[in-house]
Image (cartoon, rainbow, N blue to C red; front, side, top):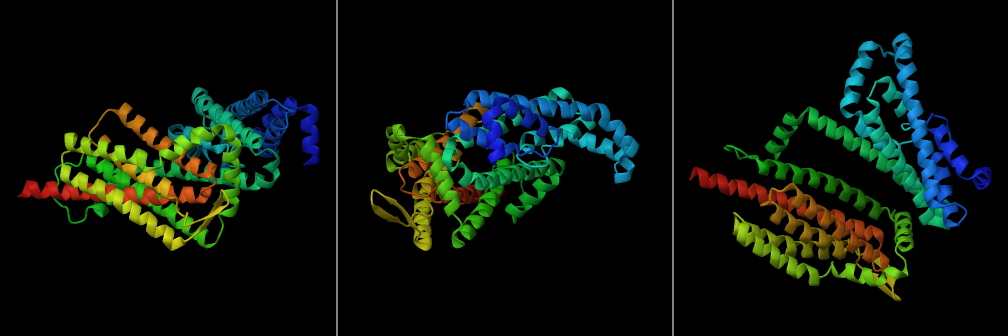
Length: 431
């Protein structure tokens, strides 16, 4: 590493450009480590962040461009001539090319986070004759995001970079693998859409046999069921990590990043964000949601009952979980805090804001309104969680657990609400 830092200090931006250019041609160079050290040099004032990002992006994009054209010009004839030796003949290549033409571009963006994969995607896209314009859009955007993220992480972590590098790199690899898995699941869903929908709906509404049309309800229940499966999986992983006491590294890294990005000048803003996770915000929101249900709801009593149940039940759930896990929290203002797992504020913010948004958006079909409200809920919940970490009243793992347990609670209640609604409507039709 001393040799790498010495070269970086001596050659600067030129080394950044050529190292990433050569790595994208599949040379075994430590690109992520180089970018992280570049970020460290930016933190120390030896390099400029904007110039470092520009040279790194230029090197990566130049490398993926050249690898594409090498694959385009030389790869297909070579594969046709020698591919049969590795069971890759013209027929197999045509089949792979067809699949890659439909779905391969989505993998380009996340491929940069998977070591070994990013080195061959350019060649493979060239071999399969993916249109260069499509390739460039996804590959260039992925390369720029990849280099910007690692350089920025090195800049934010600063002198702590060497201690945290392995942990951060592991999370980035996990992110890439999870993204690739989600992409595969989306592909399988799209390929077997009818079968998946039929199986899930049969599982969710057993005993309900006579329906003319589900329409919007089908999508809502399916989306809620998918969210429930995801959050339950995350919940089981969190509980396992909690029992194994494996949160310390994650808490240290996440807390350091939050306090580095949001310095002392953010204290007034954080006080405002903290109020978003209190009754001062929830009270008016619940009242407005209830009014919206009364004015626009089709099953007013059912929806109002579920709104009350989600709010009160969420509070009971959070209290029970914190008493069950009984985790000693952080020390804030010299006082030891207890029972912080999961975070009450993040669990409540997700359940109240999320379920209120669901009840209101169920009666709106405008895409712009739906997207705006969903993004607003996500941003609000994130700000509440960041404020908890900023003031050292909860660990980052407490905050994450609040999101996960809240997600389980809200998705479960959305499913129950829609199934009960279907049953009531079906009884009314058959009466």
